[in-house]
Length: 228
Length: 228
DNA sequence: GCATTGTATACTGTATACAGAAAATGACAC
DNA sequence: GTGTCATTTTCTGTATACAGTATACAATGC
Image (cartoon, rainbow over all chains, first blue to last red; front, top):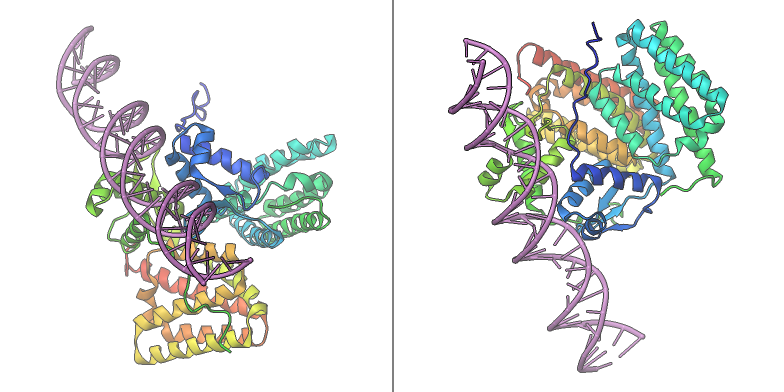
């Protein structure tokens, strides 16, 4: 009998124009292709993408809810700036929330889940040895996300995701120098989870994120990257 | 010299149709006038308010971002349900975040600010003695908000506000029996802030919210109110 | 009876068109 | 040069109209 878990075709949501615009503009903002403070005129964008203003407006409003875009009193849209203070706040909130969620995940994780997380981590160890930073970053995301998925705290997870998304993608810049350290921290978290030590896992996660944040700040401080 | 912090007139944005609809629908959902699960058809609502579908759509999308409204795969909107689990998660996040923000506020608060907060609290004490629950609730909101305003943590504050708004307005139901207790908790927080004890203030705030949450849960558990 | 296919309906997404408000421009007086 | 006022431009918000897709239901074949 074939595995009942996987259907041959995954259900797919039609991707609307608005969705397409949202994703592309988000990417452009986060990557820095559009500079902070730059004005976003609906008609211009619509023309550039060959659509009408309506889906552009929808996308802009969603970006506004994400905090990536602002509007002035008149309603004119522009890209939000992101400075060192924003970076600090984002990381301190991530520390708080991701620690909290991991503690909740602890009780929910099955042995099966833990095995999968450990496998992910072993793959990361491999990527680290290969010096494959790109693969490492991707796996790292999957690791964190899988962990939070298990916690069954939808609001917290949504907030965490929005914190991730609100920040320029700086992680790849510093992760290169931190792969070994990062992996060690992950193993500390996993060990606590395996032992059923929720508070220990939360503590390890907070430390993990704090360390990553400090590395980033230092990098930014020394002019390694510019924010928005 | 008057306090330079407060401008005499707050900048005001023209209230668009969308804003109006957003506020009214939010109110209707939070108050329970529209039941959880109920379908929200754009054209119906537009007809009821005498507008076209566009501002209705805008308002629905914003409510969706707030988590008050959901859409299925087809795009049909309906009111999100809010159960005991949601209540628990909301309160545990409030505990976490509001504690965090208070700790940050501690360093920022001027003597002037503290005086104002204490005055607010004295007004609440008065409302309590008068048995004026309505005034108490209003002052209580101002107290918390003023405190968080001082922290200068815009992201955290936004998240806290969205947690407040995502919940049916249950506070007034339980506050009546808790005014004295609540005031005492507030004074504990204020005392810690006055002493510059950030961690103590955070701890007191967490305890304050945890207590309020427990009271609510108990009330809900005994069938005192229905959620959505 | 049941399964399958056609057809109407009920929604939303998007395009186009218009209205209105703020900002930019330019003419003019001093 | 500087300030004031009228005019144009620029930009968004909203209305209307159309297109497309998923559901419900009736019609058809077996």
